[in-house]
Image 1 (tube, rainbow, N blue to C red):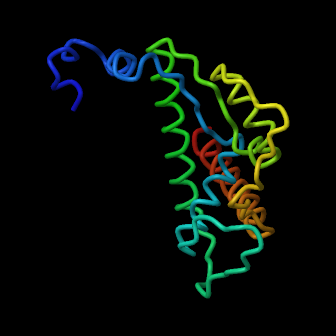
Image 2 (cartoon, one colour):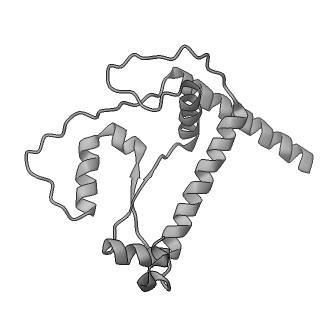
Image 3 (cartoon, rainbow, N blue to C red):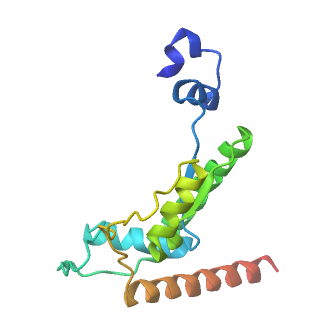
Length: 165
């Protein structure tokens, strides 16, 4: 809608954002393990539980079912979305701060320090950060689903290669 403003009509998307938000800095949140991300998403969609607070033992009564197609669809969507962001940043010569979920879950304090450094905001000495309000939901089942997905994906790839030969 900003392109409807006369002053912004001739600007591309990144130029509009730079003009409106005074040269924003970008923080790109990603996961290193896209398979685990896809599995997590599929499990959350089945359980309708998208986050969990520490100590919360709420579990769904819904039976969970491994579904290769849904995990693969989500994996491909994640990959396509990341490629779109990479293209956006590259085309607009933007250098985002890449923040990985795995690093955040390993140390939220170290992550906060790195983000503030990127933003050129000093980290207050002696600041105590509260514990995270959500916790990682990965379980033995998500590990099993990721392994099963990778196994089926490899079988499909071998079958495709065999047909091509």
